Image (cartoon, rainbow, N blue to C red):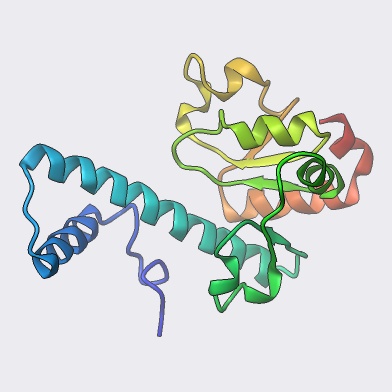
Length: 178
């Protein structure tokens, strides 16, 4: 069976989230104001889209034969990626070592790339590859703090992701310079 993302349900179909929320509230017997409903709808969309995007991007990497290690909680519950799960890493020296030793630290966040993880990884000597976000160039966002292309690299498509990952794996001097 194809996943929702594979069937094209995602950013393109906001009514999907509205349906999920209405059905869920109905099953639980909950009601809420229109304002609270819209807030919950935005939260639900953000959570789903982040999950779908990460799944899709990981699938691209795996299908391209690129080695992937997934850190954090929950990856062991994803059958497609269970073998790649490495678990949670404690903040501090252990996490800094993971960031520093990784060829690429992938950051996928549809809300903002001006994120603690980006700065932690860079501070530890890691190479960040982030999903491009239109907000990256707004005042106070990523390009205000770090020069995109010089201090952090972004991708916007499957082809750019795979090309940049392959370059980072092959061009040590370029990766270290960034």
